[in-house]
Image (tube, rainbow, N blue to C red):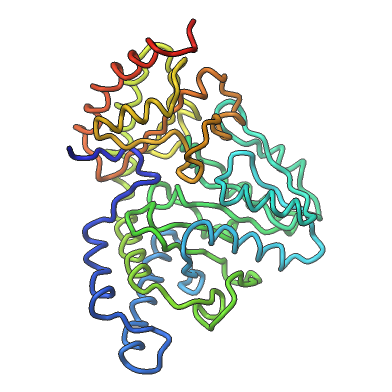
Length: 384
């Protein structure tokens, strides 16, 4: 049975073109690019080519603003820790209640280390208030960290405006843009974003490679200490094949951005409209300002995990939230922050489409979902 990936925030397959780009650096050109011999130094230029591709994809002004990492989590940790180290004497961090665990877990750790962390609230549509951010800002804030797009609902946040507010108080601004890259164009030219994290596997590159954008002129303190790699900003032998793949994926992501905004959005809307025909269902999140391929939909009086198991039997891979928090039976922290009623929050499913999905995928989901929900409601302990 072919698998329908309706969880492309977490299970995106490597694009065949990306795989072909990286293949030679797994089998033939596998020298260490930091070596002085030609077997290694001959591959160093492909890292710089990938740096150019990533910079062009996200709109960076200089290739030196791109540092390769192992993933989005490393990029987030590096960015926030660097901001704190370069703003000595400032002991406050501002973030939101709906960030990815990569940021929230670090924030809670920083609280135990003596930092004060403010968590901005979201409304019932999953939106932050810039007025609340303005009220919370003062000269003690070292860094503001707000995601570009929520990984569970797809809701877009006004990061450029938030960055400008942070700069009014000489604080740095970081955004976790892992979900947004390749789906929503960000404005780096405005200078509002100082630090930006991205991850390869969200744009059809392999897992295990990411990047950090550091705006030119900003002080930076490395998190990974070691050798001189990445101009001394990230120690460790370069993952050449992964970096080449990330560069190729970034180039394709920029190429297919319009496809995400048109065809993929239309498929998402068709899927959403069909699922809302099921009784007692609702979409979670701002209906206008969302990523084009993501929908978070709740079905009252059923368990989201049970829905996923039944979808899996039909060859459909979906999710009930962040893949980094799978295994928890508690309702999503994002939906709780939004105030979604308990009987809906427990029955939430995230379906996220991308350019590799087809209209037939959408129709298959719409064919099987009503029966799944009906059967689960028949045996549900959450009766009317």
